Every structure is written in structure tokens, then in C-alpha cells.
Image 1 (spheres, rainbow, N blue to C red):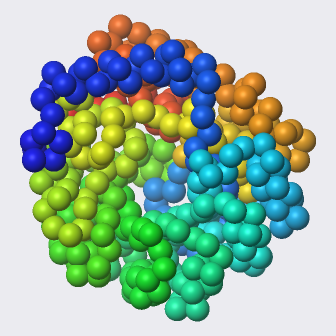
Image 2 (image 1 turned 120 degrees about the vertical axis):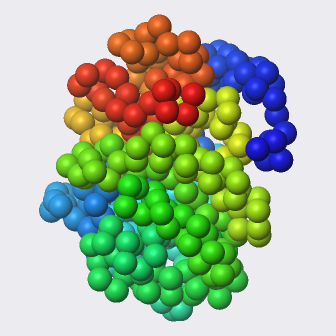
Image 3 (image 1 turned 45 degrees about the vertical axis):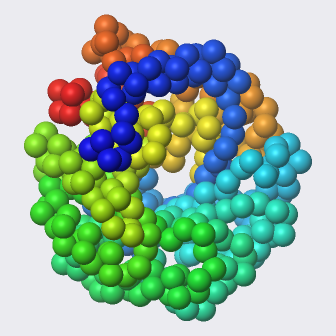
Length: 364
């Protein structure tokens, strides 16, 4: 493990204390918008068993028009230094929006940097070239196992081949800074980790983001997908072992405080939930929220771009994400609270006021 970070537990603890001080003294009082997610649509051509947003299970009500999104982008350009801001385009499947390329071409001409998450099934060679022409720099494409497991998980026959073809089309274009595969690991595909590593290495991507399934969205109705404690440890040991083992870096996502053993060994930063302090999101109907993975609750909606100026919302609201309100229940007297601050907001249970998933007792 030392070959990853080379940091001792004592050094990590020192860094985490410095981060905790920074959050309390600088970041929470004066947050800095770095990533703005825009949910282009709630529609999707797959029906993933884990979807945190339940995409495809609802009819879109009053979605934003092209003119409204473009007007919002103009406002953001006036109010923020967009050289320091990344647009993260997502859905649903963003490419299902008919005016997608018109909107992103406009964003590109305004000077925005942007990337996207996609299931990859609609990325033909022509689409890949249009993504390059409209300024896309990065993309993360979801692949959740080898063919049988992937298609079972995404409930979409034939999708594995279409997705892998989409990834190859992106790589063939040779126009993007970063083409990444993201895989959700669950109880039914964990035994394919090594085979996935071999397969994805052959494709030529340079980054594979491995994340655990979360007890949110549709997964709450399908709990047998959740990992056991032993399987969690297996995932993080796998990432640690494979992280720099070849030309394809393997890394973990942003979720969860992992304890001193795994922090900085599976990703290049220490845990900090970015929701509401570095990250904000706009849903398909214009609601302003923190992270799109956080439970969609009315009391967590901070405004709407149709009625509110985004900068005012960012500067004056988002209070729950910048306070210590989660220091309660099992977190109240936890010795790790200073480092995790209640852990990821997307896995926080706002009814019981406790985390739905905490790595204490699993990893440390």
C-alpha cells in the first residue's frame, strides 16, 4: 500500500486535521463553486437497478427549455469566473435530449469547460466527433460488469456491446483529455473485478473508477445488491493493489470517509463531501440543489433558476451543507466525526438523522 501514497498513518492524521480546520475556518464560511452539474433530462434508455435518481420512472414535468438553459449559462458566465468552473453534464442519458448539441455548442462558445457522464450506448463515431466539436473535454462512461452482468444490472439487452463501441469511438476520436470507465460494484458482480480489469485494460482507457453500490434510489428496494463487510474490504484492497499496476489507473470515487488505512491509497485526495461547498446542481426542471445523488426532498431544494439568481442562492442559502447539523445520533460522540463530518450527504438519512452507510466497523 505504501507504494501508492507512501504516507504514514500519523502523516495522514495530520493532513486530515488540517483539512478539518480548513473546512471550518475557510471553506464553510466562504464556499467556492468549482463544479456545476446540469441534469439535461430525467429520461434514460436504460433502467439501472441502482439509479439514485430513479431515471425513466417518472414523466418529466415542466423541463427547462433550450432558451432557459442558455440564458442560465449566460448568467453564470456573468456572475462567476468560468475559468475556474467545470460544467458536468448528466441525466438520465444526456444524449436523449434532442437539442443537446445546440446547448453544448452554445456553452462552448461562451467559454465553458465541460464534461459528461453517459451510458455510452448512443455514442456513434459521428456523435463522438460532435462531442469534440462542441468542446467536451472529459467523459465517464458506465460499465457495470461483463456482458451478462452489465445487461442484467442495466436491464438493457445488447447494451454492453453498444457501450463498449461508444468508448472505442471516443478513443478513436483522439480529441478528449480524459475518457474514463465507471463501474458500480455490487453483490452480483464483485467476482468479475479481475476480469473487468483485464477487459477494460485492453480497450485502452487510462482510468477506471470503481465505486460501491449505495443504499439510495432503486437499491433501497433491492437490498440484496448491497455489499457485505467482507466484500467492501475486498473492493478497497483490489483498488489499492491495482491502482498503479498498469497503464490504466484504478481509483475510487468521492464517496465516504475510509479511515487511515485506505485514505489516499485509493484516490488522490482525502475525503470531503463536496455537496454545497464545491458542487451545486440544476435539475431538469430548474431546481437548484447540492448533489444530484442526494435524496430529492422538497426541503433540500434551495431555489429554481426560473425564479432565483443562482449566485444569490449559492452565496446565501445551502446552509445545511455548511454547518454541523449532522453531529447527532451515532455521529454525535464519534471520534472520527472531525474527519468525516457525517460522511457523504447522498447516503445520509434525513428521516432518522444518521448515515445509511458508514465505513466505521467495516474498514476501520
